[in-house]
Image (tube, rainbow, N blue to C red; front, top):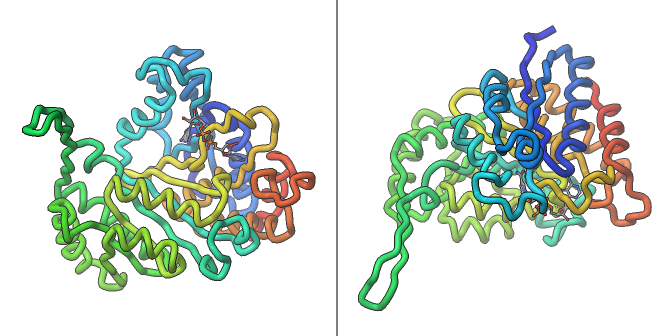
Length: 359
Ligand code: NAD
């Protein structure tokens, strides 16, 4: 057996525990099939942690994450905590955990399953072959720059400053080049270098770092153009790297190419191999406790963990293949079913995928 990897599991609220249970089943199956070893430790996080411990991110949960090799997160939040003060909101725990774990990039794959092409609002022929990843910077840019109001000549003014230093740019760009190397070796760096000084520093840095990655084909795309090209020729992109606000917008746009939120995985990474893996969707309070949530986003987040943190490409491929096989056979949860009366539940979908994982 390979060395045992420590997985911190924070299932969270709503459908979080339901979908995480299926992802753990998939991990256990890869132990059997590929001989990998995982040790799971569970911690409270989000609304449930507010109820039981009086804080969304308890110290012992954070300590558990810090001693783990990777974190598997379900989802947090729900109407019960929506009117809480800021420090007692589940979402505050999300920001806190990313900061405390030094996570500076968010990785979101968007790949279109052939059998679900109809679920997208784009024409199937435009989507054909779409399989891309958006790498978004998480810690800098206009979200974190100085913000203030002042009296100007024409009344009140509001100012948001966008700041990036060269180290922040360099670390994420290197990460994106590394990811591109594990895929089809194409990287699109997205900026607004015709207008913004931060983008000019971004582009200079990308050009300098590119000399270390001569095997990766690099293109620079202006953000407005990228927004258009994602709709016109999504299949031509492989890895897209960009700053915080552009990434926020483009990753949501790319996500919608696939047509269903229940299918989208994500990772947040820092220095080294450690990462936090979670579905893009939230806690879906409207369907929580009914056993009908789609577990595929969380199961695919495990495949992402295998690729990006552990380098277990064989097991990652086996999970992705199993998902495709089950979908191709026509099995659907309610969110992706055309005929809702034939939809299957969370556990049934999880079982089908687990049974399809093989070498
Ligand atoms: P949501 O993603 O939870 O749900 C949006 C819609 O998609 C709902 O109709 C839901 O039923 C459906 N949906 C989502 N995931 C699904 C799945 N796996 N299977 C089937 N259907 C699915 O977004 P929301 O309703 O805006 O937010 C609900 C709560 O989740 C809020 O408290 C929000 O703050 C929180 N949230 C948390 C995260 C996170 O934990 N990272 C992310 C987004 C939202």
